[in-house]
Image 1: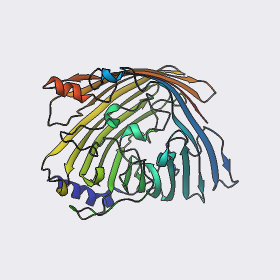
Image 2: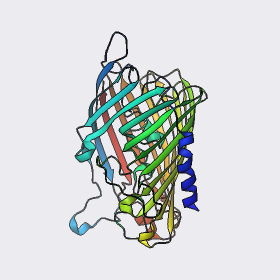
Image 3: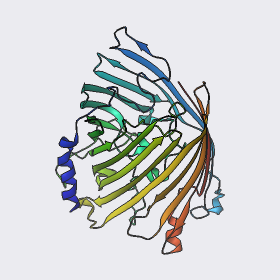
Length: 404
């Protein structure tokens, strides 16, 4: 049955694809062309522009882990993965040419390997309703990932998107996450009428960690083993800014409701076909931001694995932020994840609180957050202990960000 559902979604992509950003300028996820942040050089007729930018984040991290999974004989400590870090040190440029092509290149100097190239793409804007984007960029899934980098409510993404799944089989290569993030591919996107936007495309499905073509044809479905993804959003009050907190947007009233789906054919070393479905909502009303998502991932094994079972993982979050003053935003989030799949009882509950301070006229943002990992509903103590392995029970972060 899942194969037929997947085929229906794949067949629908050509019909739900055809649009571009409403202002005709593609957003690169860090700055927007013609935005207020940073420098910009432009021709007299406005057809050509070049905008360099920088975004740097430095954080202090403190993580405390439960005793399970630690071997005291080897002097393993409950406090680990703590200290200072630089999550992002992005240097890039973006712009437009001939009023039809937008482009972006971003290097993340804090990463290594293929992840050094965070983004590299160009976007051909045919008209308001149809654009073609090619290169490495964000896949159309999850409001949390699609939010402009540095303008998220909290400095840490929801754990339900980033935590690896737990399988009842000892397959080290089969640990998919619900979030898909950056990838290489091609996407059609744009606006349909005044209130609808869409994105639909094909990607390698290997994530940000590869800049190479490594895929094959699916043995089971006889189609290219790629990630097929689509997203459609309804914005009845105008285009929703891709922000969860910006002191320059304290008089907006925008709402967004979106649905998305993707299929990663022969993902995870050609062992599984991963299907993801999501629904998201966000409301920006003056100083208040409200948002939430629910997502579901279905993992089915390929025929060569000779495993008849399939597994379903569910997660989501609700969050809120409020500017108590033009520079101070208080935040809260409740995140949950059925990490061990619906085949076993129990889930993770992950409440978090935080605060953002925007230092006026400097491009500096100071963020702080705390998250707790709770466990509930497990049938046995072993299941309870295994469910949060690798995830800190108590997490704290203070981040200072600079951008221009």
